[in-house]
Amino acid sequence: MNELAQLRVYRFEPGAVFEGGLVGAVERMQLGDRTELLDGLFISRGAASGDFDAVDLAVGGRGGTFASLLDFRLEPRRRRAITERTLAEHAGGIPRPDIEVLVAALEAGGALLAVLSTGEPATVLEEAVARCGGRMVADEPVDARALAQVGPRLRAAVGARGTVG
Image (cartoon, rainbow, N blue to C red; front, side):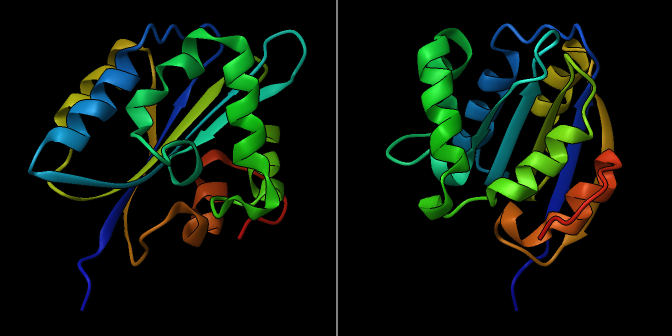
């Protein structure tokens, strides 16, 4: 029998400043031995345009770690490429329609971070979220190994309407 994973979803209001804190926290989670990061998703919605960027650990982290995607934060061209790869139907992560439903639930300028992990809670992530002005909107055990398996719970966590998972 598999150990239940923990789904944690954090929401960030418009104006949140990330400055690499979340990336560093995820990297430390991956290096630690008390928490196993199974999957992660970060979505941010543009303040003016409503466009969005997204990176899914199952897709964006191939060939490296989620944290190695520092260029997602720093390089707009890479961010767009990573978002397109995250949204690609064949990518194996969270399906595009599901991500679009989550984006629609975010305020312009807002962001969402969802992580699926096992082991002890990641204090380093909680601290980074707090420094960025984020708040936890879901913290529950799930029988899943990928965020694509918990679509309805993600939708409920952010108050999204529409079909996810």
